[in-house]
Length: 223
Ligand code: ADP
Ligand code: MG
View: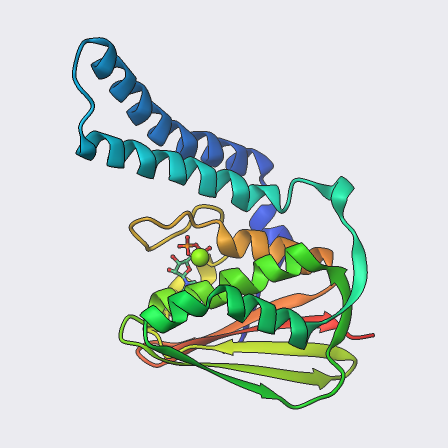
């Protein structure tokens, strides 16, 4: 069954998100403080310590930048843009990762009308998030199929992976802030993506089958 994400039902408690950020950032900070104390007490920093510190700093960086795309409404600059071009730019950014994971992209464009109005950085962020999730779930490689279509005045972009798929219970948790099943995941990518698409008067839906794969579809008003 197709599940349509409703941003309001996921984002109704702003306090929950604020508490989550504080918590997620406090863990790496506590660890970094611990190292500072060790060094102050005379411990000589070695490679392992430095690697851990770098990982903790990167985590804080990732968490804050995932929120950054949302947190600057003053900067929102809607222009007309072509989603086919935007997707090609996003795929170029992910090229190395796709290659490393032995993943091919099968892009099918079934319409000439792929123009929308939107904020280019934010929309890029959405497709980076969705394609990265597809890459991360396709541990044995395979093909990600991207289909561009135009139906009833909306551009549809489907991203179909050959990953492990999800149970209905897992699907129902998507978009919840900090929901992640990955060891180093932030659980923020989809929440941010749903918010961005909702701010563009669009919609994201998901269909998933366990052991077969998942398809995310973004629908945006076409111009
Ligand atoms: P993160 O990638 O940091 O875990 P996301 O918000 O991007 O955070 O995704 C949340 C969770 O949703 C993931 O941890 C994973 O369990 C699930 N998920 C997202 N995309 C897919 C997908 N394409 N296939 C299977 N599970 C997915
Ligand atoms: Mg993600």
